[in-house]
Structure formats: C-alpha cells, structure tokens
Image (cartoon, rainbow, N blue to C red; front, side, top):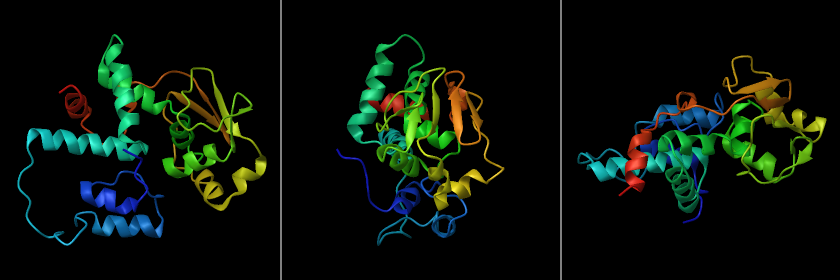
Length: 207
C-alpha cells in the first residue's frame, strides 16, 4: 500500500485528533482545529458504533502511519525489525521512527512539518556530517550532525518563519544551534510526543 498523499486535514478529522500534519498557526491548521470533531464525508454527523478491540488497534496503527508519513509496508518493516531485537518492542520501533532523517529535521525545528522536512531532504537541501543525503528514511546515529546544504535554504519563507519561532524546543536527544543540529543520544520511549497508543499498534501487528 502506497503512502497517503491526499488532503491531510481529512486524516486528522477522521481520527478526531491533530496529527501535526499542518503548520501550526497557518490558516489551514486553524480551519482544521475548527472542524476537528466533524468526521469527513456525508455521514459526518452520524452516530457510530463503539469500535471493537481490533478496530481500536487499527485506528492507532493508522495514526502513527500518517503522523510519520509512511506506507503500510514501511511501518510493518519497522515493527518486524523491532520485534526481532531484544528489548521493549514499542520503544525499539519508535526509536527507528524518530531517528529517520526527515523526522530529525522536523524535531530540530528546521521544518514546520514532517512533510516539509521530507521535501527538503528529497530535494537535496540537507547534509548529514557535511555530506548530502536525499533519503528521508536514512537512520541517523549518535554524533551525526544535520545542517542545510546552502545558507539560502534558511531564507525560504516557510523555513525562515519556523526558524524565527522562540517556542520550539528540540527534544533532549538533539542539540540545535542556529540552522544545524546534532544527535547527542538515542530517543527514549518517553520522548515520543504524539498521542498514540503504542501498545495497541504492537498488538495489531502481533496478531
């Protein structure tokens, strides 16, 4: 199954939750917040039956897939890798998701959304250890540095706007200075900031 490329507000309204897919403070984000409790489609105001346990697990799996912008096969691979390792499967899966290059760019506050971060990476604007990396899924390691290839990248309107915000703080496993950042440790389970029931995701794939 391919990665979803349709209207992002529709995904958030389907889940009844802001998934961080729109730039905070934008008109589109404001519109989403006004309609967040209205389901998309003709039956938006209809009453829905209580979801089954499987249905709830499916919804949580869909949430994390859309938050990170992954296809079904990609998310499944992250679970399979985590499940083969010794340790907490939820922690190990989240760790892989969090150290994706596009996510690290987003977590550093160098892009307003993961989709914008992915676009920067795909178009060759991002350097890892001073070398161009255009693979969004590239797994960043401790000690790796992330920066823009050219200074003018920081002057792109939506990038300069996010860089000027003072209320964006990188998680403790990242160290940001101006338009560059460094991975100082691997993310822990408590660093996962999104409202997703990870155990439900693990149970879905463990069936």
